Length: 197
Image (tube, rainbow, N blue to C red; front, side, top):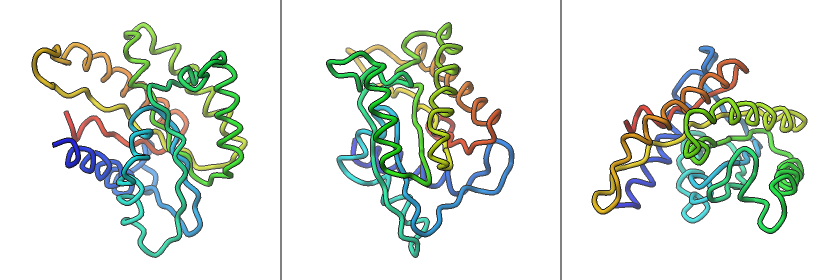
Protein backbone atom coordinates (compact mmCIF):
# COMPACT_ATOMS: atom_id res chain seq x y z
CA UNK A 1 0.00 0.00 0.00
CA UNK A 2 2.73 2.51 0.93
CA UNK A 3 4.84 2.02 -2.19
CA UNK A 4 2.00 2.85 -4.64
CA UNK A 5 1.06 5.82 -2.44
CA UNK A 6 4.64 7.12 -2.43
CA UNK A 7 5.00 6.78 -6.17
CA UNK A 8 1.65 8.54 -6.62
CA UNK A 9 2.82 11.43 -4.45
CA UNK A 10 5.97 11.82 -6.48
CA UNK A 11 3.99 11.72 -9.72
CA UNK A 12 1.72 14.45 -8.33
CA UNK A 13 4.75 16.66 -7.75
CA UNK A 14 6.01 16.09 -11.28
CA UNK A 15 2.66 16.53 -13.01
CA UNK A 16 1.61 19.50 -10.91
CA UNK A 17 4.94 21.25 -11.33
CA UNK A 18 5.27 20.82 -15.05
CA UNK A 19 1.62 21.00 -16.03
CA UNK A 20 0.51 23.89 -13.87
CA UNK A 21 0.96 27.62 -13.95
CA UNK A 22 2.89 29.57 -11.35
CA UNK A 23 1.13 31.56 -8.67
CA UNK A 24 1.25 34.58 -10.99
CA UNK A 25 0.01 32.69 -14.10
CA UNK A 26 3.48 32.65 -15.64
CA UNK A 27 4.31 29.87 -18.10
CA UNK A 28 4.52 26.34 -16.71
CA UNK A 29 7.83 25.54 -15.06
CA UNK A 30 10.44 24.01 -17.35
CA UNK A 31 13.71 22.23 -16.77
CA UNK A 32 16.46 22.62 -19.34
CA UNK A 33 19.48 20.60 -20.36
CA UNK A 34 22.18 20.48 -17.68
CA UNK A 35 19.91 21.74 -14.89
CA UNK A 36 21.16 20.85 -11.43
CA UNK A 37 18.13 20.39 -9.15
CA UNK A 38 18.56 20.47 -5.37
CA UNK A 39 15.72 19.10 -3.25
CA UNK A 40 15.69 20.90 0.09
CA UNK A 41 13.18 20.28 2.83
CA UNK A 42 11.77 17.90 5.34
CA UNK A 43 10.80 14.23 5.49
CA UNK A 44 8.94 14.13 2.16
CA UNK A 45 12.14 14.90 0.24
CA UNK A 46 14.36 12.94 2.63
CA UNK A 47 12.32 9.77 2.04
CA UNK A 48 12.65 10.26 -1.72
CA UNK A 49 16.35 9.39 -1.33
CA UNK A 50 15.43 5.79 -0.72
CA UNK A 51 13.65 5.04 -4.00
CA UNK A 52 14.32 7.77 -6.56
CA UNK A 53 10.69 7.94 -7.71
CA UNK A 54 10.53 11.71 -7.48
CA UNK A 55 13.58 12.20 -9.66
CA UNK A 56 12.29 9.56 -12.10
CA UNK A 57 8.84 11.21 -12.30
CA UNK A 58 10.44 14.56 -13.04
CA UNK A 59 12.98 13.17 -15.52
CA UNK A 60 10.19 11.44 -17.45
CA UNK A 61 8.73 14.88 -18.18
CA UNK A 62 12.04 15.83 -19.86
CA UNK A 63 13.42 12.64 -21.42
CA UNK A 64 15.97 14.36 -23.67
CA UNK A 65 17.44 16.75 -21.10
CA UNK A 66 20.41 15.82 -18.93
CA UNK A 67 19.15 16.76 -15.47
CA UNK A 68 21.05 16.04 -12.27
CA UNK A 69 19.47 15.81 -8.83
CA UNK A 70 20.93 16.26 -5.37
CA UNK A 71 18.67 15.49 -2.43
CA UNK A 72 19.40 17.46 0.75
CA UNK A 73 16.11 16.56 2.43
CA UNK A 74 16.32 15.94 6.17
CA UNK A 75 13.72 14.18 8.30
CA UNK A 76 11.60 16.50 10.46
CA UNK A 77 13.52 19.54 9.27
CA UNK A 78 12.18 23.09 9.44
CA UNK A 79 13.02 26.40 7.79
CA UNK A 80 15.28 27.02 10.81
CA UNK A 81 17.21 23.78 10.05
CA UNK A 82 16.43 22.57 13.56
CA UNK A 83 16.94 18.90 12.67
CA UNK A 84 20.22 19.56 10.86
CA UNK A 85 21.91 20.92 13.95
CA UNK A 86 22.48 17.35 15.20
CA UNK A 87 24.63 18.14 18.25
CA UNK A 88 25.12 21.78 17.32
CA UNK A 89 22.66 24.64 17.69
CA UNK A 90 20.19 24.97 14.76
CA UNK A 91 22.06 28.08 13.54
CA UNK A 92 25.10 25.93 12.76
CA UNK A 93 22.93 23.39 10.97
CA UNK A 94 21.37 26.22 8.96
CA UNK A 95 24.79 27.60 7.98
CA UNK A 96 25.98 24.10 7.05
CA UNK A 97 22.87 23.57 4.91
CA UNK A 98 23.43 26.85 3.04
CA UNK A 99 27.08 25.95 2.47
CA UNK A 100 26.10 22.54 1.08
CA UNK A 101 23.52 24.05 -1.27
CA UNK A 102 25.92 26.69 -2.57
CA UNK A 103 28.62 24.05 -3.08
CA UNK A 104 26.30 22.10 -5.39
CA UNK A 105 25.85 25.14 -7.67
CA UNK A 106 22.16 24.44 -8.31
CA UNK A 107 20.19 25.96 -11.16
CA UNK A 108 16.88 24.89 -9.53
CA UNK A 109 16.03 24.50 -5.84
CA UNK A 110 12.77 22.81 -4.86
CA UNK A 111 11.80 23.52 -1.24
CA UNK A 112 9.28 21.57 0.85
CA UNK A 113 8.64 23.06 4.30
CA UNK A 114 5.66 23.69 6.56
CA UNK A 115 4.55 20.23 7.61
CA UNK A 116 6.61 20.13 10.78
CA UNK A 117 6.09 23.80 11.56
CA UNK A 118 2.30 23.24 11.52
CA UNK A 119 2.62 21.24 14.75
CA UNK A 120 3.26 24.60 16.46
CA UNK A 121 -0.27 25.73 15.59
CA UNK A 122 -1.69 28.59 13.50
CA UNK A 123 -0.09 31.22 15.76
CA UNK A 124 3.29 30.11 14.38
CA UNK A 125 2.52 30.94 10.73
CA UNK A 126 4.04 34.45 10.88
CA UNK A 127 7.28 33.13 12.42
CA UNK A 128 7.41 30.35 9.83
CA UNK A 129 6.85 32.67 6.85
CA UNK A 130 9.35 35.23 8.11
CA UNK A 131 12.06 32.55 8.37
CA UNK A 132 11.01 30.96 5.05
CA UNK A 133 11.46 34.38 3.40
CA UNK A 134 14.89 34.67 5.03
CA UNK A 135 15.84 31.24 3.71
CA UNK A 136 14.77 32.27 0.20
CA UNK A 137 16.83 35.45 0.54
CA UNK A 138 19.84 33.46 1.75
CA UNK A 139 19.50 31.12 -1.25
CA UNK A 140 19.20 33.99 -3.74
CA UNK A 141 22.98 34.18 -4.10
CA UNK A 142 22.84 30.83 -5.94
CA UNK A 143 20.77 32.47 -8.73
CA UNK A 144 18.80 29.20 -8.85
CA UNK A 145 15.15 29.14 -9.88
CA UNK A 146 13.14 28.48 -6.73
CA UNK A 147 10.06 26.23 -6.50
CA UNK A 148 7.96 26.00 -3.32
CA UNK A 149 6.24 22.65 -2.71
CA UNK A 150 3.29 22.57 -0.33
CA UNK A 151 3.05 20.36 2.74
CA UNK A 152 0.99 17.19 2.40
CA UNK A 153 -2.15 16.38 4.38
CA UNK A 154 -1.83 13.71 7.04
CA UNK A 155 -3.71 10.52 6.20
CA UNK A 156 -6.09 8.70 8.50
CA UNK A 157 -4.24 5.54 9.54
CA UNK A 158 -7.07 4.27 11.73
CA UNK A 159 -7.13 3.32 15.40
CA UNK A 160 -5.33 3.56 17.71
CA UNK A 161 -4.01 6.71 15.98
CA UNK A 162 -6.21 9.79 16.19
CA UNK A 163 -8.02 11.17 13.17
CA UNK A 164 -5.89 13.93 11.60
CA UNK A 165 -8.82 16.21 10.71
CA UNK A 166 -8.12 18.90 13.32
CA UNK A 167 -4.41 18.98 12.56
CA UNK A 168 -5.04 18.99 8.80
CA UNK A 169 -7.14 22.12 9.24
CA UNK A 170 -4.01 23.78 10.69
CA UNK A 171 -1.73 22.34 8.00
CA UNK A 172 -4.05 23.73 5.33
CA UNK A 173 -3.41 27.22 6.73
CA UNK A 174 0.33 26.62 6.33
CA UNK A 175 -0.27 25.49 2.72
CA UNK A 176 -2.12 28.76 2.05
CA UNK A 177 0.73 30.73 3.65
CA UNK A 178 3.35 28.99 1.47
CA UNK A 179 1.22 29.61 -1.62
CA UNK A 180 0.94 33.29 -0.70
CA UNK A 181 4.70 33.51 -0.19
CA UNK A 182 5.21 31.99 -3.65
CA UNK A 183 2.74 34.45 -5.13
CA UNK A 184 4.33 37.44 -3.39
CA UNK A 185 7.72 36.48 -4.82
CA UNK A 186 6.46 35.32 -8.24
CA UNK A 187 7.80 31.81 -7.60
CA UNK A 188 6.38 28.56 -8.87
CA UNK A 189 4.22 26.69 -6.35
CA UNK A 190 3.45 22.96 -6.34
CA UNK A 191 0.11 22.26 -4.64
CA UNK A 192 0.29 18.71 -3.34
CA UNK A 193 -2.60 19.34 -0.95
CA UNK A 194 -5.55 19.69 -3.33
CA UNK A 195 -5.04 16.44 -5.28
CA UNK A 196 -4.86 14.48 -1.99
CA UNK A 197 -7.57 16.27 -0.01
